[in-house]
Length: 139
Image 1 (tube, rainbow, N blue to C red):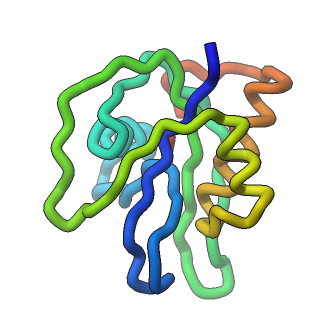
Image 2: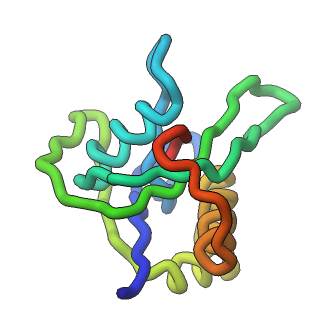
Image 3: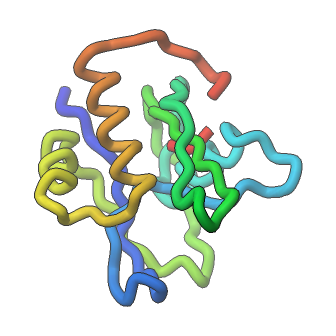
């Protein structure tokens, strides 16, 4: 089966346009990163994953932000009913992994966390690696 990636296209005012991104969101106080990843994948992608693998962390702009991004690979997906928040005006697209990697290489994806997530997921899927079950955070 062809591997597909949930990509969200939404308006980002700071970037003055629409950006392609992986599902993501802010961690609620006291919430483990994996719980955030699960919630955001359900809310934005309309799916639930049976297996999660950590793809590590990254920092987006360490010179000015303390934000750490937790990256995860979600597998064994099933559809769920979803409802977008009113402030989340977005398009959801399920694209082939090869297409998304090509978009990243072609400069069509500008969001840093999305680029890191795509390349780490593509490498993990191509070369295998330890699966961490459900102990991992962001899809």
